[in-house]
Amino acid sequence: MIFRTDLALEEKESLSGSLDGVQQETEDFESCRVIRMKVDASAADRLRKPAGTYITLELPPISDHIDGDDQYIRRTADELRRLLPEEGLVLVAGIGNRSITPDALGPAAVEQVLATRYIQGELARVTGLDGLRPVAAVSTGVLGNTGFESAELIAGLILELDPAAVIAIDALAARDLSRLGCTVQLSDTGISPGAGVQNARTGLNRETLGVPVIGIGVPTVVDAATLALDLMSAPRDGWEEKISPRGAKMVVTPREVDLLVARSARLIAMAINLALNPQFTVEELTALASR
Image 1 (cartoon, rainbow, N blue to C red):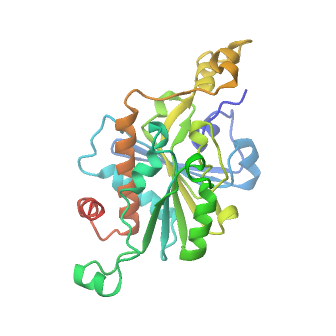
Image 2: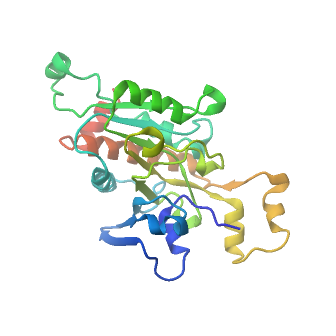
């Protein structure tokens, strides 16, 4: 059985020995660690991840820790800025099901993203908001409610808006319980919507959408089979059926998942706002986004 995870760092950690085709650097900050990985095509298959750049931020538990001085928002924004084009409109897409708490990260975050595309000309001048980078934001909903894939909606918006890049926000799955709610992953390889809750849909990436796609998310679940087999160290006959009765895939999520999603959504949204408009403070951006 393959231990399932959306985190490139966990995939690398599961492989013994050095891995050719992967460059990794680690930078430590106060109560925060940043691991940057570059994966080339020669390592992609073994790592089970597309070639590209993956940035992992290891933070204190987001649901327990109040980021009083906004240091984690600023750090996430700095790392996100590395992956974004310097100019042009950015389309931010919140992926997921707002009715399922562990999958609601995308919709909850995109509600706090400062959409600035309409603030231009005389409106920008009289409000003192000239110089804002143009941003459009959308919550794509889920196939069962909308009848269309997230990728289809975003592709249509790309044709209309011609963005320089897409930022896709989605909940992730981890292998290790210790990573739930204290890890942020960014990548320039896009995302597979619904992967965190065992419902993967059409991928959002440069190949499917024709523009750079930056994926960002926080792990909110661990696959139950992955967790059980990992804790037992090795697969045992009959256990997979007990963990996934009648083939139904189960996931494990923290008891405080509602708080985790709410605080993770703010961290991600404000990091996006700050990365795109660094001339403002987090406090100013929070006030603007809440109007």
